[in-house]
Length: 174
Image (cartoon, rainbow, N blue to C red; front, side, top):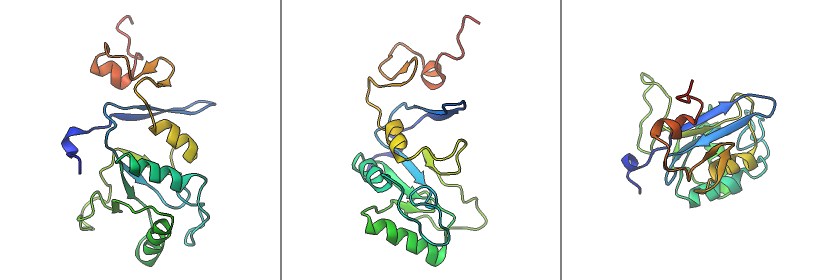
């Protein structure tokens, strides 16, 4: 298992507009904890029933796991409904690192916030809605020389940390 202190994903920023673009800027993507919602994200929303799988959901999650990313099921479901969701995903070949927790051994404490530690959250309730698993895959599968958004490429090494994180939107010539 990778050392969590060595890996860090920097930023997901949503740029609103008519063609909403989710721009992913990553410092080191060797390992990510990715929290994924169930209803409306992995499957069509039919809560409390289980909807049909979303197109490419399971294929994408399996590929992310092959790349050593840890997937966390992060859902509103509890009890028997949660167990049904976990079993449904298991039936499609996806076993989660943790379920509604930051790590498998974490014990739920109602006195502590349920927000979990993850680098990225994939959810249908995002601003702009769910982009679909094909687009999620495109956003997360970034090679060193891939231009993620106009003017931003990971291969640019002469940028400082500030520019790597926020791009050139804070140009010194202002």
